[in-house]
Image (cartoon, rainbow, N blue to C red; front, side, top):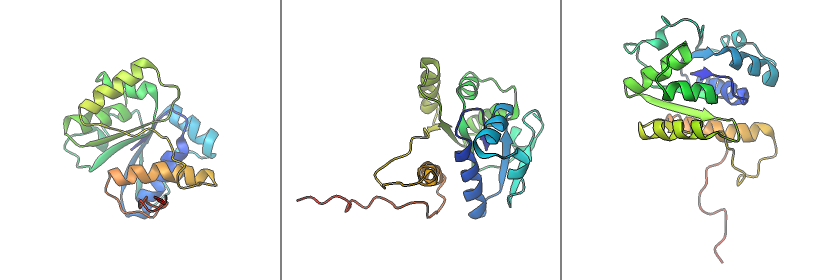
Length: 187
């Protein structure tokens, strides 16, 4: 998993916490711009995330790290949040750092790759890149929280998006309420 330079580091932090709580091991990459947003938005350093149970922090400059290899077994790779620059690089096949290399390894190995773009508005090149990657089987899951569950806190909005990511990974969770169809009466 990588936290890149788009605003929305809280999504990445919450996802790491939830995956750890569910017993998953997380190989974490935080890009330089991701570290800036992690500090600005969460008051954290990447090393603090590595203190969470099951989390291993890798240097984004280390192209020899485990996530860079197709022979290393992973269930999925997630870019959360995914910056436009990272999206553009992955769509163009540029693997100049561990975050992009790991995404391209996921694609070549036909593993689940989830991109969580947060930037808005989205530029045409980034939209086209996401459409192309979607046609390759990449899950594009924008950080767009819903409101039908009547959230009252920022945490509930963050959890809404993180719950959708966990659903994509088939991870059982108790973040929020699931829609039942009985929320609206049909009189």
